[in-house]
Length: 259
Image (cartoon, rainbow, N blue to C red; front, side):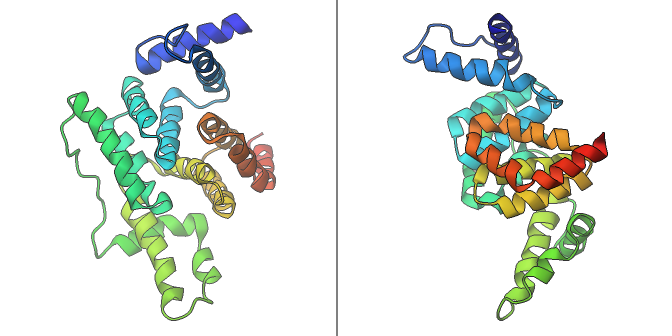
C-alpha cells in the first residue's frame, strides 16, 4: 500500500505539475510528504471524476479560500491536463455571486498571471450570451427547472421592494449574468457551485439546495460525494462532514436512483 501510494503520487504529480514531489528537500519535507501522498497518491484516485473535473474543483475551492499561491499552481495544472483557458476563467468567474466580487477579482489576478506566463493572450474571448434586455428572461429559463419559484416564495415577507429585488438579483446575476455564459456546461457549473458552497462553511442550506440542483443537472450522487471528498484536503474535514450531513437524505435517495 505504501509503495503504491508513493508511486501514484509521483505519477499524478508529474501529470499535473510536470515535476516530482518532495523527497527530502526544503524546510519541511515531512509535512510535504504527508500532504502530497495524501492528496496526490490517495484522494486523486478515489471516485469516478477525471483529472479535468478534479482540477476545476480545486481551483474553485482555492478561489473561495483565497489561497492564491496554490491557486496559481493549480491553474498551471489545469492547463497541463488540457483544460482550456476559457473553462478555467469561467470556473473562477462564477464564484463571484457566492463569495463576493473582491475575492473573485483576487483570483482572476492570480489566474491571469499564470496565463501571461504561458503566453496566453488577454483578454480571452467574449463568453456573454445575454444582453441587458434578456438577462432576466434567460436567467429564469435556467433557474426555473432546477429551483422553480422557491426563492421568490421564501422571501415574500421582506419589507419595501426587497421582496422583489432580492429574488430578481439571484435570477439576473447568478443565472443570467453567469450561468448563461459559454465555457462550462450546466452540469459542471452546478457541481462546482456545490463544492464552493461547502468550502465557504455556514452555507449548508444552500449546499443542500444545490445538491438537488446538481442531481437534476445530471450529476450522480457518487460524483457529488467524489467532488466534496476531492475538495476536502483544501477545505478541511469538518466542512466535508457538514456538507454530507446536511444532505444525507438527498444523497442516499440519489444513490438508490443511480443503482
